[in-house]
Image (cartoon, rainbow, N blue to C red; front, side, top):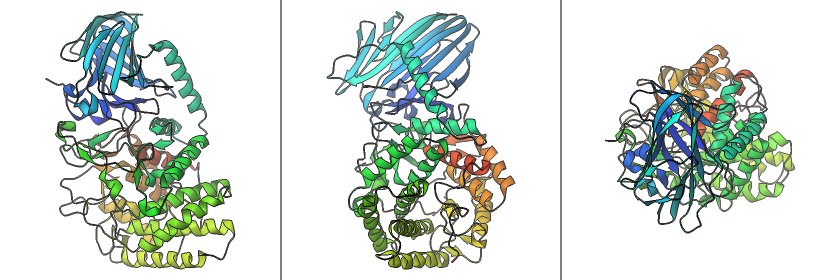
Amino acid sequence: MSAPTARIEDHAVIGDMHTAALVDRRGRIDWLCLPHFDSGATFTSLLGGEEHGHWTIAPAVETVETSRAYRPGTLILETIFRCEEGSVRLVDFMPLREEHATVVRIVEGIEGRVPMRLRLVPRFEYGYTAPWVLPVPGGAVAFTGPNAFYLHASTPVALDFPGLAIDAEFELAEGHEVRFVMTWRNSFEDPPEPHDPIAALAETEAWWREWTERCTYQGEWRDQVVTSLIALKAMTYKPTGAVVAAVTASLPEEIGGERNWDYRYCWIRDSSLLLHALNLGGYMHEQEEFNEWVLRVIAGPPGQGSILYGIHGDRWLPEKTLEWLPGYEGSAPVRIGNAAADQFQLDIFGEALDAAHYRWARDGHMDRPELFVATVLPVLAYVEQRWREPDEGIWEVRGPRRHFTYSKVMAWVAFDRAIDAQEHLGGEGGPIERWRKIRQEIHDEVCREGFDDARGTFTQSYGSRELDASALLIPAVGFLPVDDDRVIGTVETVERELTEDGFVYRYSTAEGSVDGLAGREGVFLACSFWLVDALAMIGRMGDARSLFERLLSLANDVGLYAEEYDPRDRRQLGNFPQAFTHLALVNSAALLSGASAITHGRHAPSRRKASTA
């Protein structure tokens, strides 16, 4: 019988900036896609049972206490197992690859003599395909179709091969260690040369420490900020510079519910937020790589663009349901791919131009004006044509299109940032006067149609009474100044009506709500950080800091966050670790500590005159 799936927050991540694995507190790797973030999973027990693939190394006893931590400034995970027989340390990491993905697991005896058990169940294509598993000198090989991986043990360990799996039992005494190396390779390639696990450990630790030491952030909560920046780096696909929204697919926003989505892709919406978080850490190289990735993927007619892209820049991400997987704690369906790629979301054009404008504002000049002509002008023409249309909005709802207030605000941002850029290029003339008129028209309409005068708050969509946490970003993007009564009223209404235990829901998911789905999701952690920022901007610094500290307490034992949190069951929900949450944490920490005068990668009113219309 399969052991129960670990809670989402009981996982830690290891990775090589091509892919990443989740390791739970029991020493089980229950999620790993090979060879890339968005490839088929080899270990998929996270979304099913042990029969869907995992790799477990743990004491072969009933009662075990565990503790764990990353080596400071690295993505090297150390788990300590303590039992009556003694204690052992499990060191897990992925070397920064030159060719193929490799997982290294080193088991060290600390005291006593501890019986250990290894069980490796390889299953390719999200647990669907069982490979042949055969012994080879020094280890084993598993292969089927194009996939193969090789397991090597540095110390002779007797391996058994029951039911297309690999088992081993061994005893670990104080001062002794056993090292295992698993390497993925195309099945038609020659077997790999075994890694030297000790050399790989030293090289990996040195690389991560050097990268962390480059961090220039000196504000409060530096440890939490550095942890979040490491998580963001771990979710970066090194060959292209893309940053995935999360390592996982189909972890539920409600246990047992249907809100299960694939987040192993890169969203244009996250771009300006991500650029700002990287800037706060002093990681300019990563900024430039991500900028170049964005420029490559959006090349072409705006109408052919997408809200999200694969890590290589591909736009075709068809959504499929994996019927053979029961889902995390029975949360079905299990989906891969993401149908949101085919939606019309007006706000992304403002997000993209805001990211480009952020770079111009940071550098004080536009070093490639030809890109303005090639990208900005077509985007503005497209937004001018379509901004009056309804869309699916920032939250990618599966219900009918609406005139979402935030989408219109970001259409305003698109024109606002283009006007500022045009002024940098040569001031008046050309289309700038028409853009100014459109910007004002959008502003007037949003304030007229998207604001509820009776309640004193911006609403989710025109004419609705529903609230939406995205309205918290209105002052951050400069649409209205922070001391505007409409901003203050919106912040207070969201705080009063869209929170539970002080944490913020994205929007109402009551019966008949906008998303068209059954059930109710958890509070959204990034939105809760937005409330922190909004409270700080309207002058309620004490409340902002209090909420921020409470949010910090929701991180798991190694400092990682999923997408959402259930305040009733007190557990994390959604895909994990979540880039949106971690970059929001970095930006909020900087704002509260005074390390930056820019909020969310956008020009806050202290740096940019907000509209007062």
